[in-house]
Every structure is written in C-alpha cells, then in structure tokens.
Length: 553
Ligand SMILES: O=C1O[C@H]([C@@H](O)CO)C(O)=C1O
Image (cartoon, rainbow, N blue to C red; front, side):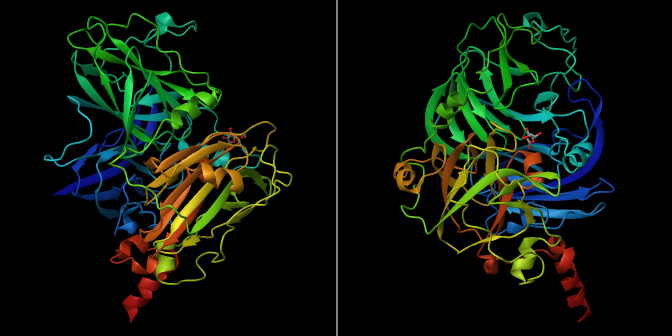
C-alpha cells in the first residue's frame, strides 16, 4: 500500500513545558504527526520547507532505505538541504515491523522539536512472538529554553559555551517546568500544577483498563539526555529493541539512550482503584533536570487522581554498573533473530576524544573532527567528483599507546570529511573506544547510531579494547540486532554489520551537540549500484553545477 503525506514544516509558538517557546512544527503539530504503516508499504512524504531562511531534511530513524539511500534524510551525506519554499519528496519502503521515529538531521533542528513517531506494524495475517491487548506510544525528548540557534552559536563559539542540561524532559512533547504534578511528594518548593488538561504542557494521560496486557512503544529522540523509564508498581517485559525482537526479560525500570527504541509489555494487574506514575529521569550526567512525569490512569478513575506513593526513585545517575547490567540483558530472540557471520573482513577501531582546534572545543574520531562538505557524498562518490571532499582513507585505528584514562596529551585535532570506503558485501567490525574527555576524570556516555543498517552488538567492555583477549569474548551466538548502541565511560563496544546496502551512511553519536561538534564518521559502500537518485536530492554544491551543465548540452 502507498501512504501519501503532505507535510508543511514551519516555526510555531508553543508551550511544551509551561514556558512560552518556539518549536519546529509539522502541519501545525508538535511533535509531528505519527506515521503508522504496515510492513511492505511505501511512504511518500511531500515535505515543504516553510522555515523561510534555513534548509531542512528529515531522517527516518531505523529505516534501512534499501534502494533509496537518497531518502535517508542526512544533510550533505544523502541529499542537499531542502531550500526554503521548496518541496522534496521522500519515498521509501518500510520493510521491517517495529517502533521507529523521524527527526531533523541538519544542524541541531532536532533540538528545536523537529521529530515524531513512525510505527511499522506486522501484516494482519502475521503473528508477533508475544501477545498484548492494546498499545500505547511514548516519544521521549528533552527541551531547552534557549533557542537551537543560540545553542549552535554557543557550541561554535570561542571560547566554547556548553549548552548545559535540558530544562525539561518531555513525554509526547509535554513536560512541566514551573510546577510539578507530584509536588506534594517533593521536598523542593515547587508548586503543584493546576491543570485543566487541555494545556499544551499538560501531561498526556495513559488510560488503561485493569487486567489487560499493554504494549508500550517507547523511543528516545533526546538531544542530550540518557533516560531511565519506570512505571510505578508495574514490571516491564522488554520484547523489542530498535525494530528487532529480543529475548524477553523483566525489569523494574529501564535505561533508554537517545536514538534507541523499545517495546515493553506490562500487565495492568495492580489495585485498580489507584493511578500510577510513569516517570523518566536523567542517567549518566549529573541531573539538573526534574524527573518527567505522567499518569497511568486505570479506567474509570479520574485522570486527576494523584497516585498514593511518590514517583519511582531512579537509580543513581552515575551508577554505570546498573546501566551495564541492563544493556547486558539484551539478546537476540533465539530462532527468530539472524546470526552474525562468524568472521569479519575488516575491523575498524574508532577512538573518541574531546579536542581543541584553534581554540574551538570539538569531538574527534581517531583525531579527525567531522565537518560536512558542501556537496552530498552520495552525489560526489556516485559521479566520481574527486574535489568534493578529502578522498584519503580515514585512519583505521588509533595509537596503541594512547592512554584512554587520561585527557589527550596533545589535545589538538583537525577538521576532516574523509569517508570509510567499505568493500561491498563485506563484514565489518567496529570497536567504539571511549576515553577521557578534556577535563580530568571525565568520560561520558555516547549512544552511537548507524544509518542504513542494523548491526549485531557483540559485546561491551571496560578499559581499552584488547585484541588478544576481548575478541574471544564476542557473543556470536545470540547478539541483539540494533541500529543504536551505547559506549560507557572509559569502555568499548563492539558491533558487526554487513556492508550490503548501497549508499553513503552516517555513523555518529546521537547526542545532537556532539555530532554538531564532529563526533561521527561516514561509511560508503556499493555506491556505483545506487540507481534513480532524484536530481532534486543533489541540486547543490558541485553536483548542482553538473546538472546545470547537463541541461545546457
Ligand atoms: O561536549 C560536551 O562538553 C561538555 C563539557 O565536556 C565541557 O564543558 C559536556 O558535558 C559535553 O558533553
């Protein structure tokens, strides 16, 4: 089935947390409209840019874009930014059931609220490996009172100004800054929210019937925050990660990093005369942002009935062992999940460091801080335009002697836009190596996201990756397939994927300011096999000139 959408993107006054602000809206909505489709459908989004003075793209996070790499929505990788006033047609097939989302992928427009949910259902006659009665959807994000333009300027300034922690955590675009819906339980002097329910910042109440099984789809499109999600008094069974079935397991609460999505099942088996909290709390960074809250409302109780107990207490923000325990519980579903090839053809080690370039603060991978060229790679590689970017190979690894426990001894780095050219259909291992940032004793969480592929998570480890010992510990039996994975402070994460999707694909930290500061790399594979790239996707930089010349011939 074809699903056709007409989307107009524009700035809009909105009040996501009780403080007046401005969001990037789609068809007057924030978050943008939810796309619901069935496996095999083709999605057509006619996207009109009404931002007047800036470009725009939308990335369909988790969709592989097989045969349509030009529709991946990554500015200057897969396409030119869509100019103000112009309409671009995204056309792609959704080939895998799951919980996904979409978001801006140009500058920091995601931080401005350019996002929404994308849900792909199994065909009616197909069964999923679990049962549920009804479904709920929860899109998580974080919100700043400073405009995203100001944030970009802060990050790109000399001296660097960090954007700091978000003011508010949002659930389906709603949060509360100046009041709390749980004030009576709080020791802070924050007033109880007086809400009618129709305010833009009133929490979206999750209405449930007693004694049923619910599937909660949850995705995080935060610009920065790692989160811990809990449903007071309800055990959660985790069954899906990034659109892939996993071996079900039970938890009291779960971590979710930016770029990840999950499905969890829970039973409404608690005392039906009460309502319960649904909470999200910051993990991995010293929280300066209040917990995000809404109500699980057992019908027929009033939605305004405050739960009997305080909101769930999250694990300590820096209890990384707690987070690792959760990540290490995720396995592919035996029998249903694919297994990785047993051998890799190429192993790439990527060291992330915080650096300085001429006084600017940046992030680098193997000492190169990513900046995008002015011609999208997809066009310059397909048409062999060699002066569009630095065609030297980026480094396959980093110095053996690098001490990941200390700030970089020589913090100077360089800008670069090189591409890892992957041989088509080969198996690639990536070892993501975390390290100390510029400050002493600082190493942060970085959730990495790969475009165009799912990868198997072969393992996590502490300290520096050791070829001799750590390779033997890789899980090749039942590793989970994912499109996003976290690296823990001072640790490494190993993934494996097959470079079998012709196109050019970003692989980057999903913390938006970190990508903005250079924390990413670009992969290209089988680009000569890419067909039917619409001219509009490449109507900028050196490819624009090429099309103009063609027309004159
Ligand atoms: O990129 C970052 O910069 C700051 C800090 O390292 C420097 O102020 C921070 O917490 C980040 O995640």
